[in-house]
Amino acid sequence: MRLDDCHNFHDFRRMAQRRLPGPIFDYIDGAAEDETTYRRNTAAFERCDLVPNVLRGVENVDLSVTVMGQKLALPVYCSPTALQRLFHHQGERAVAAVAGKYGTLFGVSSLGTTSLEEARRLCGGGPQCYQFYFHKDRGLNRAMLERAQAAGVEVMMLTVDSITGGNRERDKRTGFSIPFRLNLGGLLQFALKPSWGIDYLIRESFRLPQLDEHVDMSGGAMSIGRYFTEMLDPAMDWEDVAEMVRLWNGRFCLKGVMSVDDARRAVDIGCSGIVLSNHGGRQLDGSRSAFDQLAEVVDAVGDRIDVMIDGGVQRGTHVLKALSLGAKAVGLGRYYLFPLAAAGQAGVERALELMRIELERDMRLMGCTSIDQLSRGNLRFR
Image (tube, rainbow, N blue to C red; front, side):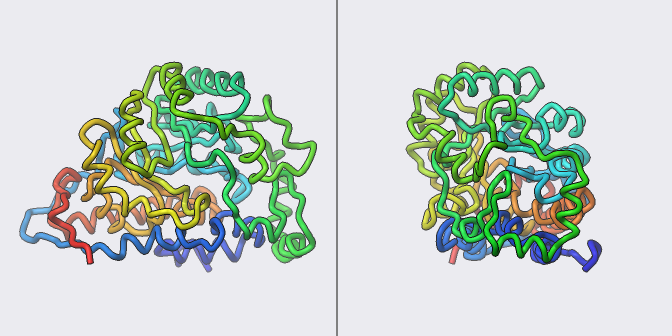
């Protein structure tokens, strides 16, 4: 399968599955427990229909949006995700470069495999956020905030739905961890994809630059689940977050908000934005989809805070539905991770270009020339 043969999310997913060892593919593709929420995230969009208008003069289409003071050329952004150099040796470097080319927001994770300073350079000074996990070590939290400020990051994005690890059973079956401590079945799957292993060994050493001065992840089998369970602070509360907002003294976003009450609290403590998200179905299985929650949250706080959304987005029409309900922008996760795994920077670039083309075409078909022309009048729910 060639990159030119990839025309949608499912094509990229298949190409990534052919290249990656099973445990790595399952880490991207998998979700919590029965993966009900993972499936629900995309299904929610399919229960909503678009109602287009015609004869509107749609020769020129403007896809730009402004989110938390950042001008984006596209209404989609690359959500921060962990461990990207496991999927392809270019990792965050590829994603940052492509996001910079397309003029959209790129997020670096606390568990990123490229430093936020390097990613900042690669995205050409374009919009960038730093995705932050709240650790038990308050000194570590403060040091990471100060580092992001020194790097010139303008938006802090605190993930609030991961104070403990989700029950990701696919990872348990293979023994997926960093560093690798695989069981026999997991080792066999790596043996079946030797090219990935050779590539991993000949490239620069795998590391977590945001954490390597603070956390020793080389002395034992520090699995991703154990990181969440042992390093992160389940005692985190609204007072802790309010203190972080004050310390940051800039644009601050909470990722993982789902309820109206929490959205209102985010406004009260001075946040600039929230991302409605269930972590791609990877945390609490059975939780509601972000798209299904979007309208009531926008109605409650959308005039006081920027509301974004991620989870399950596979098409430009999904993005238009979320924007029509009032989302300011839409985060992409697996949508760019599978192309990254399949073909590195070239894959991410093809995926974002396909999304750009879809959005422009679909806007014309909707009879809209700018994002602010989208409204709930364009939607019908079954």
